[in-house]
Length: 424
Image (cartoon, rainbow, N blue to C red; front, side):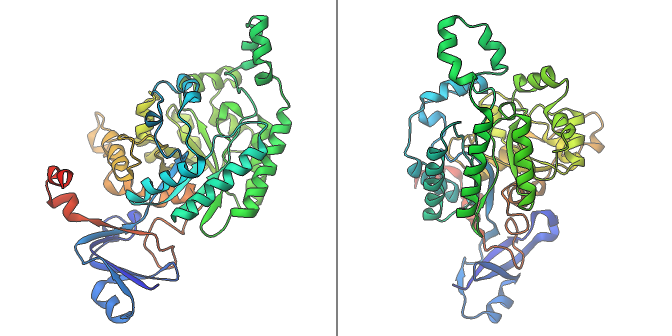
């Protein structure tokens, strides 16, 4: 179908700032792509056969993008789990209310679409030694997203180290004989076999599902749970396939930071750089406890982070140094992580939280300007497209890009008192 979407205002590209905004504009879509962007009257005359969406009173903008989540459908809190420090929470989350994976993915997709999100990244938390189950889960999840009609990136995840606790072998030695017997399978297992199984799983998923609408990415879950050889195999394969993205939760908590300092005498970022791996296709989730050297390294190697403002507040991670990461030139992408501030996957609200949270100032006010609305919008559009494997394809309304767009009712947002919308 050929479509003309029109708006009182059109945001074509957040990276263009004010120059990326049109008044009384429109975009013409055909064949699933943006063909032309300009003023509405001209496009209507040029493409009279096109179906018109919008009456010229809305805001037309690119579809928003969630750069990191787990497709839970309902938030942790809504599934009966507490919000606490992540190390404590991971133990509690074992007892969460289970939701059928197909239903969970479809619920997550619907909640994203409702708030204007047209592309999302699902990072799966897998379990070592269960390749068949992970294969089946991935297939169900991806097909569910297709059924709802949302564009997605999917990254299978697993760990092959520290499954029980940080520095697990040392911890194991402190246990009583009966507890050692219970914990032994979680500490002593074939770590290479886990990596082999994961690489086979990835290869299968990539061959079956990686296409124009779905991107299969690497997502080994927790940096403290990944051995150096696992990193190296993932990076080598990712580079062979065109530098596809590698997502890893990193520097999310104080214990995570402390463990790297104890084990390597340096941060996780510096350790990866020592291995010669840090590169533009690494995306680090959370990155709350990055220091100045980490930020410089991330910027120089053109790596990315996904920022989870609400999640970091909910599970007491703290506040990531987003202002300084942005100032250094690090690519920062929004990620809701299934823990938006209102437990509703509202991506516009998440952008507002980020905007309010990172209006950093200092004694030298002239040289510490706040992040502006365009900086924040980039995090939920073109920056997030990059970490989802859709760089240059989504996140802006430009000719040749995918026809991912939303119309926002300006009257509901700005002209109608909020209490009226809530009682209709």
